[in-house]
Image: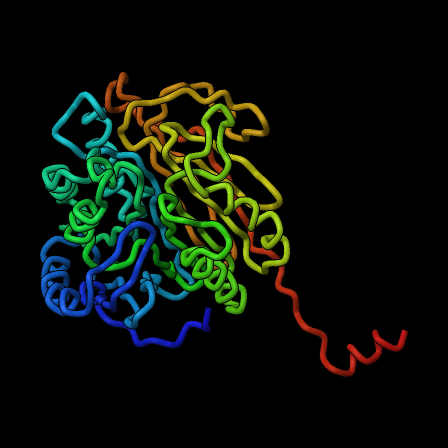
Amino acid sequence: MPSRPSRESRPLAHVVGLRSVRRGAATMHGKAFLRASGFLSALLALCLSVAAPAARAASGNEPPRFDVPASGAGDALTFVVYADTRFTRNDKVANPIARRALVEKIALEHPAAILIGGDIVNQGSDPQDYKVYRSETTRWKEDKIPVFPVLGNHEFKGCDANVEPCLENWWNTFGSERPYRWYSVTIGSTLRALILDSDAALKRGSEQRAWFEQQIADADADPNVKFILIMLHHPPVRDPFYPSKGDEKEVERYLSRRAPSLHAQVIVVGSHVHNYERYMRNGVTYLVSGGGGAPPVPAARLFGELSKLRTSVNYHYIRFVLERAQLSATMVRFDATEQLASAWTAPDHFEITAKRSKVPLPPLARDAVATN
């Protein structure tokens, strides 16, 4: 894959970068359609996106890279990660009380960005589910908080024969990603987030895998990047009682070889399992964050699970606080059975410190080492 060309920044809503591409099972239908839909996608993004004007995206014919700048030099930057919200009118497939409480609590964090790890809606073929999403997250839009979504399996629900209607509903809501299913985000000056689609191929030789490896190489070549956050819906590391769904294990296999040599710390967040889990594998932090409102499932917390939570129902989000050389994470839990004043707790917290920079020796010192 050729190296990524430099591209100027444009406002988030104007990221189109349209061309005829194939992403997994989705294929756009030619240049004429793309030219016709370009204006509509930009217009829809302006009307429907909850992204802030401060979030920018590079233009071009590759998956976009968005930019969430820090508010000031040296300031800590807060962003939120969570998933499996299942916005829908059907209260039987999600807990609307927990879902709405989490949305409001997240808004109170005043985050620089919100990253949602998939299953945002219950049924991707139903435009009404996206209407519920827009209605319940009005506060985010009013506060101009940028939202960066991940595709999950529920985004394709109801589109078994043809995924394009589901993708249209997705792009009509999060128009800035059109026509792509994966992309990247720079958060502050030291964190690069890679947004993957675990419903598309991730094996070696696939288009997404080539892009993913190139993004890792790009981040490793940038001395400012201290942390790499990888998000995909199906978690590569999780309670083994839940089987793999696609190629997500390919991410763990790749990182087991690649991560030790990277100068940046790597964090991987999956969802899909409606609970919270934390693991460490080969120096990589793996999280499962699927507590956005979907029906909870149990977690055995064996095989090296680090949070050791004793609660079985864990509606939650993760608050990340990024400083230049440190990334702190807190699992913020909501108990729907408690009174509001005591419903919020923070049962898991961890910190990741940037790796020490490898300062190259000057030429004379290298010569002295070589001759000894």
